[in-house]
Length: 137
Image (cartoon, rainbow, N blue to C red):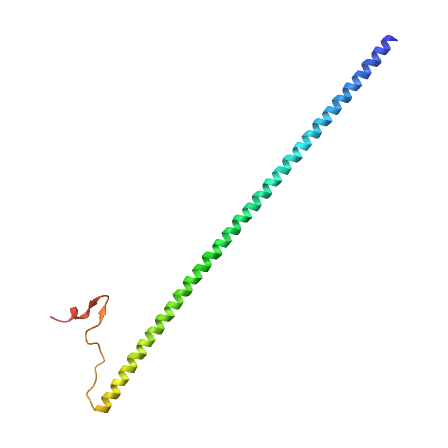
């Protein structure tokens, strides 16, 4: 029986070793699975941080674009207002000249004077030089 007990003991020892090996394998698989889960969580967190940063950058770019568009609109409005003011100034000058000419014509009719020449008396300047330089010599 001694041999039978040895076989039984050997069998029990082998069974325990197999159970321990299975338990160790199971722990190893569980550790690997937990590691993979943690890695995926880290990847997901990094991806979320990346998307949040990208959204923040896009928001800043959109605000910058909006500011530039507002400045452009303001400049366009200044140009339009400047043109309108120039037109009005020119119109005012024409009206003033016309009124002056009409006054002089009325004075001419009252006094039976000769015709009045409303052309320039030679004092016009263009760009800082007088027109007198173009007269014949």
